[in-house]
Length: 328
Image 1 (spheres, rainbow, N blue to C red):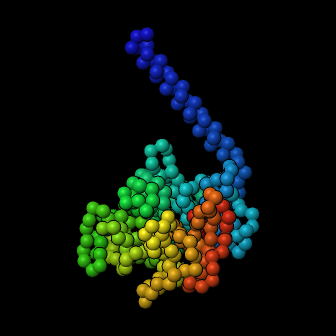
Image 2: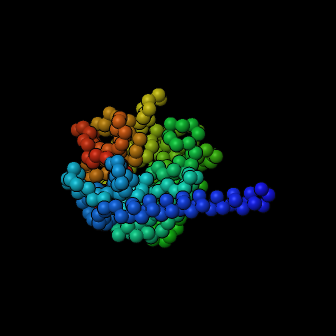
Image 3: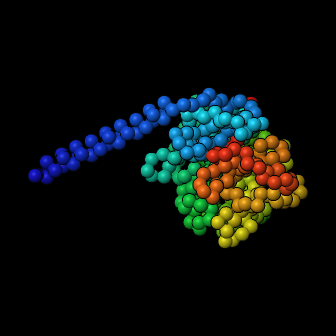
């Protein structure tokens, strides 16, 4: 066989393989689209939105249940997300794409139509929408796959849906660390949460092996640290408190505990969740937060606990993660 013949045969084989692969993907998507689904709107107040983690055809698809009756039958949508969040009729869906680590960030309207789609590198990690639906944020792991690894690196982006302004990576924001202007190559941000003015935000910054709570101003494009050992903050509906995860152990598999922080007094309160939580908690109401926890035998559930340190954890939604309370 001549070199030319071998080349033609090889190209033909590659073409056939690609055609078969394309046909498989198309068939899989067609089958998925044909799967039973429900009507989900992101402005249906009083429902919990989450990522369905029950085994089967619905794995990874968005779903909702009544917030007042979280054990009721869930409405299963068609959209698949690795991380999802929504507020005031606007949603953000993070979905992994392709064999090379990458993610599609999709901004959604109340009917789940695409408002904006961005592609970014890395694995989906955190997602947030401001209370009025204007500001979106997302965090990706781009190196390493866990906050427990020394080699991890993140990329956190922000989208203003009103102006269209997009910041793919907020690492360039001028930072004041413990009262002094600070620049370093190892600065990483994650876990943004927005205040009601759509400019003030809180987040985690890591540098020099330490994590800090940051208060930022999106319009002025500045940020300053407030205190150490704060990760994945979540601002309360009244803007007075943050719930966050705090590292309390050096050797545990999940070394974090949930705490509440009063922003006026900077007083911390441990919440009554004894298990290690690696999630950015979301507020169920002004008194309660919810978060995802993996089960020992596999799978995820959404739990809730009072935000004042009282009570005890309560199972909210079985086979679920990435919760958000839908608002109008």
